[in-house]
Image 1: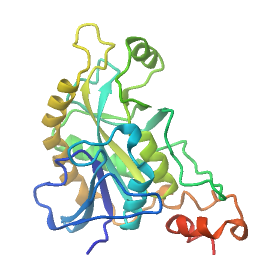
Image 2: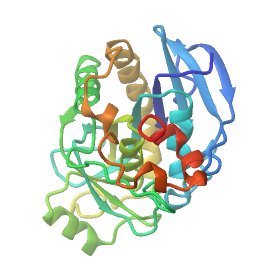
Image 3: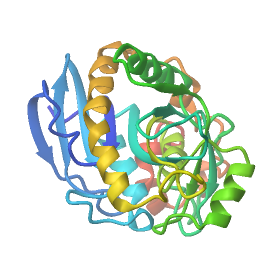
Amino acid sequence: MRDAEIGIIGGSGLYDMEGLEDIETVSVGTPFGEPSDSIVIGTLYGRRLAFLPRHGRGHRVLPSEINYRANIMAMKSLGVGRIISVSAVGSMKESIEPGHIVVPDQFFDHTKNRKSTFFGEGVVAHVGFADPVCHELSEVLYEAGVRTGATMHKGGTYICMEGPQFSTRAESRIYRSWGVDVIGMTNVTEAKLAREAEICYATLALATDYDCWHETEEDVSVEAVIATLNRNVETAKSIIRDAVPRVPATRACPCAEALKFGIMTPGNMIPEDAKKRLGLLIGRYIS
């Protein structure tokens, strides 16, 4: 019963989604350490879901402290083939108002201290990342949002900063000049690792504020973020409930074979400990 096909990574509150049946909580160890918290697995409309709070229950883990590799590998070990990320973001455009939801199709990595690959230590791999989210899964989420009455924005660029501090005014203005749509602190790292793990990845980005660039709005604060995010939790849950039964049973997207031609190190030159560590990822390609 522990196998899951769709993973949800987000804040607390999603793991108690109404209608979830056959619930169990599991602790998953990985070769990369422990994930942010235990994972709640349950059934919704006949589909097995796995819920993981990326910052841990009680919001205990900073964005830079998250063990992203363990989180994604834990999902992979449970059989997850698609991940829906639910995240609070700042809006960098007037048209994206607090309370709106963006389904971005691009990321800009402005982080500095992240482990964003499973590879190294004797094995080299390169995956395509020109289109960093799964188009198929993103379409399902966007259409579900429209059906539930949320104000949705299709596409856009999510710039991922290191944090944990919010932007300075100078930074916020520079990011705006780059043409980005929203700003957050977590999703690009998840997306990179999900691609290496051949897991489809898409984001529901919940706009909570205008960062600090907006001249007529209050600067971003923790209180404002939490208040808006709490209002959006029910909307995000409604979108997930609508989307889950519409997620195709099989994957026809390129995400499912992202590593097929990406492993550069010949199998006979990969150290045995690396083969063991990366078995879930490379086992189908390396004997």
